[in-house]
Amino acid sequence: MKAGSTETILRARGIGKSFPGVQALAGVDFDLRAGEVHALVGENGAGKSTLARIIAGVEKQDAGQMELNGQPYSAASRAHAETRGVRMVMQELHLIGNLTVAENIFIEKLPSRFGIVDYGKLNGAAIEIMEQVGLADIDPATPVRSLGIGQQQMVEIAAGLSRQCRILALDEPTASLTENETELLFHQIKRLKGEGVGIIYISHSIEEVLRIADRVSVLRDGRGISTADAGELSSSDIIRMMVGRDLEHEQLRHAGRPGEVALRVSGLNLGKKVRNVSFEVRRGEVLGVAGLMGSGRTETMRALFGADTADGGQVYLRGADVPVRIRSPRDAVRSGIAFLTEDRKGQGLLLPLAVRKNISLMRLRDVSRFGWMDVPRECSVACRYVDVLSVRCSSTEQTVGELSGGNQQKVVIAKWLYRDCDVLIFDEPTKGIDVGAKFEIYNQLGKLADKGKAIIFVSSDLKELMAVCDRIMVMSAGTVAETFDRDRWSREKIMAAALSELRADSV
Ligand SMILES: Nc1ncnc2c1ncn2[C@@H]1O[C@H](COP(=O)(O)OP(=O)(O)OP(=O)(O)O)[C@@H](O)[C@H]1O
Ligand SMILES: [Mg+2]
Image 1 (cartoon, helix red, strand yellow):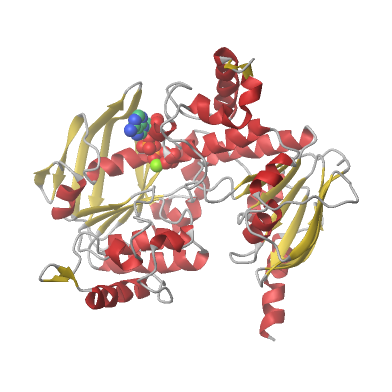
Image 2: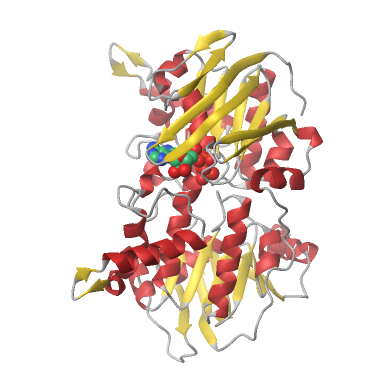
């Protein structure tokens, strides 16, 4: 896509921001033109969200100046920025669960007559906006709480799009969207560009950035490294600018010999979403699970973990002939199964507590003696994981709520790594994680397998599955289409398997 104009609408110079113990930004310059998509990339904790939040008035800079349309600009609050036409869709969701979809979209300007909300008008207007983002089949009167995480994200985006603006910042908007939803979002971005809106687009997906950005700016350790036209960059250029070295997805794992069967699932069924799914995973093995969005991967894992009640099927552990009863996640955890869900925003981080506490929470007994917390031991455990996963925090005493989005996710991963289960299920563990840290996570998965754990790795990124897994099971329309051994798979074969049941369905 080409930028529509070269008129600069926002000019930021020498932006600096510190938090206790961290210099989040130092001397950053940033320009945004009318009608361009300007991507902001960088490692977790590089300062991307902070910069966008300063522009959108959510946070106040300590140093530097900004100009909007050539006039000095400084926003005292988010609401104030909005009156100047600057909006932001944040990385964390800000929807109010009890309110309906329509109420969330129009929260600031509910249409009312004589002080009474006009629900007919409200829902009508909401339908119009929801159609644009592909939420046409959702009743605007549904409480947001009952939607899936991807749909909630779309509602948040719809709310951002519903209002007039000149600058729109989108902070990792696609992290929990399906491919379809992403396409609809890109379509809306194109429309806004056409209207001359300047778009700040934060993402860890380099493919996405290369697809929709006109210019790319890289932040590294809170400093602006460089800005370039997207057309002149390849994905390895961007990676090099971000992490300062090359990273390749070649084969990362040199598998040992897998041990006994750690988990066997037989004939698992859950409505139409999971149909007669059977598979096994051995100790020392990484089993990849591939498939399109909606192919039943997450549903299968949820059913086997007891998060949803299966209609039928058995789960056998450690080669036993008698199935285990898993009726709740608690049963699963007791049986030695861990599940890192894709919905990390809603999952088990205690934001006001320190990193140290969050990591040790799952195994308090091991870091306490005679019922007393063994703080030095707790610290050393937490430090080890912070180090292994390069969690960027001022110390393990920092509260998790202060960490950047990607670093919060690393803490969730640390927590499960420390939990020490026999079978670990990771559902999209690298979403929202920067490329450098992704490789650290791949290494951790490999190491866990080498220690004799059985790993199930669900991912939409075929490249990473092919780099890390020993076998890849491909799901299609709720069922296992095919399972490939390493050396037997190819991108084409996996894609064909992922589509196979869909074709069978439509015949
Ligand atoms: N409220 C806060 N209190 C303390 N530190 C903070 C706060 N907000 C951000 N930081 C720190 O500032 C740095 C930059 O954070 P920021 O959220 O901007 O990173 P990011 O580039 O958006 O990362 P990610 O890709 O993980 O979302 C991080 O080290 C983070 O821990
Ligand atoms: Mg961020």
